[in-house]
Each structure stands twice: as structure tokens, then as C-alpha cells.
Length: 138
Picture (cartoon, rainbow, N blue to C red):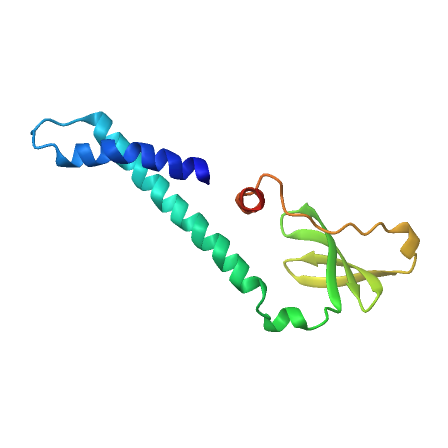
């Protein structure tokens, strides 16, 4: 963040000089610098607003998140177009369901909890939201 601000401050004199030029000639370099500075300013403002809104909203209660969750989707395996297997937890019991375009079908209730390793879902490492989270933490 500090690098972006310092880069903007370094480019600011050339932007002002390019805007004050009274000549009629077109300067590609000055236009490029103006565009890059404007882009850096907009992205910087978006990141600052996102950072502070995240801090403000973190303390607010969100209606649905206060309620206990009794149904969890543990895993989904896609078998083909519009066909999948779903492992869900309902009140401590694990159910295996088949999903298709016709609807959901109950397959089996799984009683062997020690055979199932429940792994919490992590966001994709390559997603844009994960990148923003890493930038905000630094």
C-alpha cells in the first residue's frame, strides 16, 4: 500500500506537467502516466474502502450467522452434467444424497463417523478474494 502511494506521489508532478502543457502535440508518455496514476488512485481507494468496511462490518451481528447451523454441506462430487453426490450433516447424522435435474434422492445414512475425515472448506488459493485477503493481512 505504501509503495502504491509513493508511486502516485512520484508520478504526480509529471501528470500535472502533462495537464498544463499548452502545446498541441500529443504525448503518449504523459497520457500513459495519467492513465496509470488514475488507475492506481481508483484501485487504492477501492482497497482502502474495502479494508475499513471489513473492519466496521466485522463487529456487527448479521442475523442469519447468529443462529446455530444444523445443516452442513460436507462434500459434493460431480459425476456428470447435472448429476452429483452430496454428503450432508443434519443434526449430527451424515446423509448421502444424489442430486440430478429431477431432484434429490436419499441414498444412505452413514453411521461410521470415524471413517469420515471432515475437512473444513478453505477458499481457493488462486481466487481474487484470497489475494485481497492476503494483501489486507500484510
